[in-house]
Image (cartoon, rainbow, N blue to C red; front, top):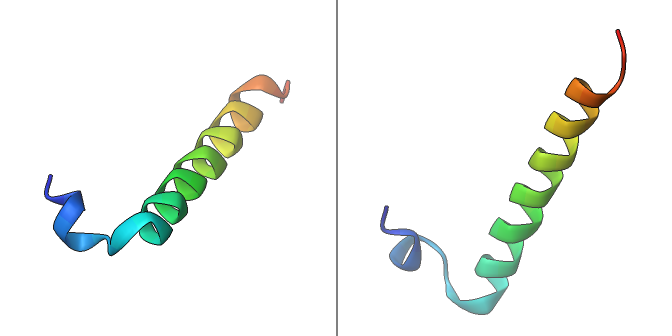
Length: 35
């Protein structure tokens, strides 16, 4: 994965981390809540 070339600088790095964190929270919420 060439993420370094795809993401411009620290701003993109923070955006990627934020997106991954939000995705993780959504996945955890979906599997944590009893359906």
